[in-house]
Amino acid sequence: MAFSLPDLPYAHDALASQGMSAETLEFHHDLHHNAYVTNGNAAIAGTEWEDKSLEQIIIGTYDTSSIAQNGIFNNLSQLWNHNQFWEMMSPGQSKLPGELEAALTESFGSFANFKTAFSAAGAGQFGSGWCWLVRNADGSLAVTKTENGVNPLCFGQTALLGCDVWEHSYYIDFRNKRPGYLSNFLDNLVNWENVASRM
Ligand code: MN3
Image (cartoon, rainbow, N blue to C red; front, side, top):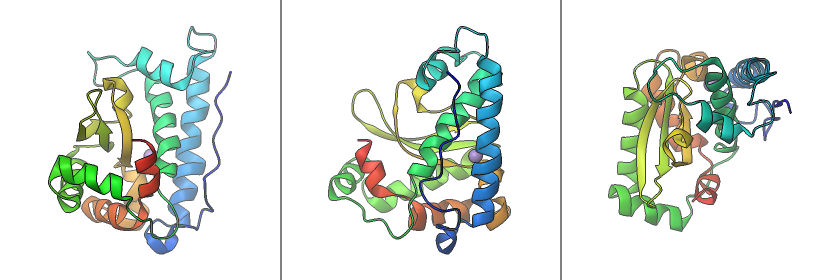
């Protein structure tokens, strides 16, 4: 079964007043995300992975011995990552649910400390990748960063929040200012109710 490109959960210009332009979403969703769909489907055609779920393919093809990974993993992990990413943002200011604020305060000392740690992870990822808020198998929360398309599924973690720090995610709106993109993401774009729903 071939994978398909999900529609954005909002209009292309819905986040423009919050720092993510229609042009960014046209490139990022319609071109970059779509390329992962096309290339991922081509990579699994005729292989043992053809009828597997996205999650099974990601976990099954992740190579712990290689930073470069392989074409199946790279494209389909990025497909999954972007499927999550659009859902993790929302038009309009999102309210931080009390249960999530309490969990973040317990794990990081305060909501502000969590944001500092998350931004530092994203800014500190050398080259392309992602930063994450994850829930570990033991229930604890952590901030992590991963290279290229690697994601929390590879480590048995649940992705609560992820931010794409590939240049294609911020170069149109923030040029080379990745830290500014990250702080804007946390302050204006995150759908905190979606994050809480993943707990
Ligand atoms: Mn991307």
